[in-house]
Image (cartoon, rainbow, N blue to C red; front, side):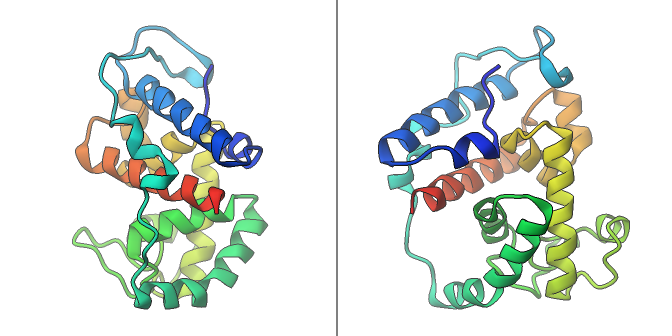
Length: 204
């Protein structure tokens, strides 16, 4: 099975190797988004589809905009020690957590979405409660709970990063129902954006 896991990305080094990994990622995304046709490891049914989630060039690290607004850069510097701490404690790649937070809140600890998601990692109140997070707007509690939540999703999907990200955005039920990344434009863009930032971060 063609998987895209934290470990195989961490084992990738050099621009050429990361370019190859980006192409592999596109193929994997085609598979996890495709209609169910046959059982594979993890209980998912996958096949390659004719049309991809996005043009392959969108995954190329060189296509990711490097410029980060000054305010966001300041927040990233302020919170990265804590991000690194909780990522290390949970065995999750720091670069992945960083990319997720950039997508979720732009590292704004006071962010509140229209659906009620809160804080740096945009935890829904029910999710936060289940994680033992008493105050989702407290950055340390939010990061501790959010990274633990991401770790759980990565374990649920056997290290498959795109599926874990899709579940973080749309819920594990939606991923299981569709046998892969749900056909929701928001979720597809969410996964695409985070993976692009993640690959670029690993190249840096």
